[in-house]
Length: 125
Ligand code: SF4
Ligand code: F3S
Image 1 (cartoon, rainbow, N blue to C red):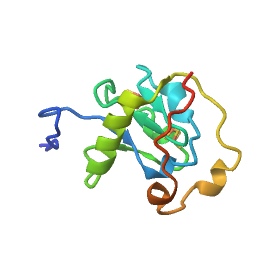
Image 2 (image 1 turned 60 degrees about the vertical axis):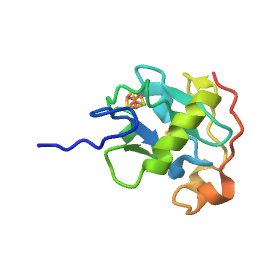
Image 3 (image 1 turned 30 degrees about the vertical axis):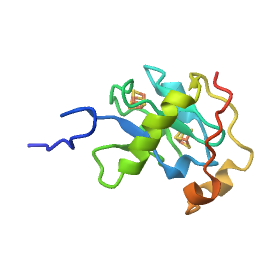
Image 4 (image 1 turned 30 degrees about the horizontal axis):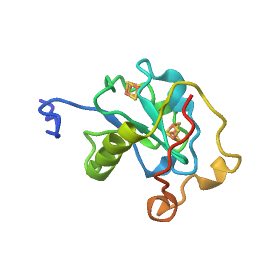
């Protein structure tokens, strides 16, 4: 039997979430594959709208720094809240944009949230 974590959206509601590894990497390969266009764009990371994500999982292996996780993994509460909050504030993004020129250099860097998270919106496309 699989136990599903109970979130604020009630039993069996699941989603995928974008986590710290996306910050300043923002490769956007995830956007291309999402069948329901539920990514939202901040200045230096994306988030997933938890109420729109259909939990298909196809975006997870597309992210080079492995920033996308299923919220059934433990310890992701902070990221689920951040995704839910900023998906309401940032513009929808449905097309692959240009990743930052130095994106590769930010893969694997620690403490990116504390040092570099920006609450500013991206352009959205
Ligand atoms: Fe989109 Fe599927 Fe990823 Fe959810 S799990 S964000 S629906 S690609
Ligand atoms: Fe971020 Fe990975 Fe998408 S780095 S923009 S979650 S492909």
